[in-house]
Length: 366
Image 1 (tube, one colour):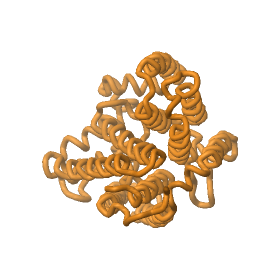
Image 2 (tube, rainbow, N blue to C red):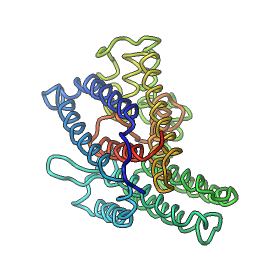
Image 3 (cartoon, rainbow, N blue to C red):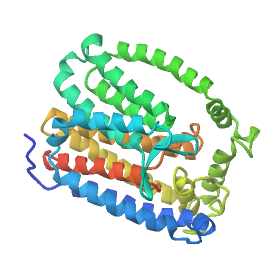
C-alpha cells in the first residue's frame, strides 16, 4: 500500500526551493546590521541559516525517500519522544530561556525547540488514530474526546514553557484534522465555549498577554512599550509602497524593529520589495498549499490523506498567523514564517514535513 510508485511532485519541490532562496536572501538583508553590531560579523546569521538550510534539505531528502507508512507504524513512539522532550525542557538547567519562554534544549553550539517537533509528531499520531477510529469520531466518548484529550495534553505542556503561538498552531491544526474526519459540529461548539473560557484565563493569568491584547487594539497608547513592535512593523510595511525601497535598503532593520530576521522578516521583505514582492511570496505559499491539498485528495490511502492535510494545514495556519501579526490584524504571537524566517528548529521541522508530503505525492495520482 505504501510502496512509492512514481516521482515526487517537482512543482511542490520547486516552490519550496524558491521560498528557501528568498528566505536566505532576506535573512541576510534583514540581519547584517544587527550581526555586525553584536558579533562583528555581518554574515553571522547568514552562515548559520545556510547551515540550517543544508541540514534541513538533507532531512527533507531523507523523509522524501522514506515510505510514509513508516511513520504510521512508529507514531506512538515518536509522540512519546516528543512528550519526553517537552518535559525535559521544563527542567531548570536543561531548558534554555529565550524571550521569556523556556522552550529550547541546548545541543552544543546550537539548540532545538521540542514544541516545533511536537507539532509534526502529533499530526503523525492523530493521522494514525483517525485512520483506525474514524468510524467512532461522531461519538463524543469513543472518538472525539480521546483525540481532544491528547491534543490538549500537548498544548498544556507547551503552555508551561510558555509558548502560546506554537500551541495555537498545534491546536488549530489538530482541530481541522478532527473536523475533516467527520466530528460533529455540536461537539466543536461545546469545545469552543470551554476554549474561550480557558483562553481568557490564560490571558488573565499572564499580565504580558493582557498587554499584548491592549497593544494590538491601540498600539499608539504605548508606542515605546508594548505597542512598539507592531508600530515598527507597520512603519516597515507602509513605506514599502508598490515596488519597495530596494533590496538591502531597509531602515527598520537598524535596531527599530525587534527580531527582523525571525518573526518580522515579512515586514522587512515588504519594506524592501514592496507590495509586489510580498504578493509574489504570498502566491508562492498559495501554490504550495494548493499542491499539498491536491496531494492529500489524490493519495491512495486514508493515513496518507490525513497526514498530507495535517502538514498542509499546519503550514497554512503558521503563514496566516505570521503575516496577520506583521500587518497588525492580530496580536503578536511569536510565530516564524515557514521557509523564510531565521531559525534551526522551525526550518528543519518544516523541511521534514515537506519531505513527508513529497513522499506521499509519489504514491498519489496527482
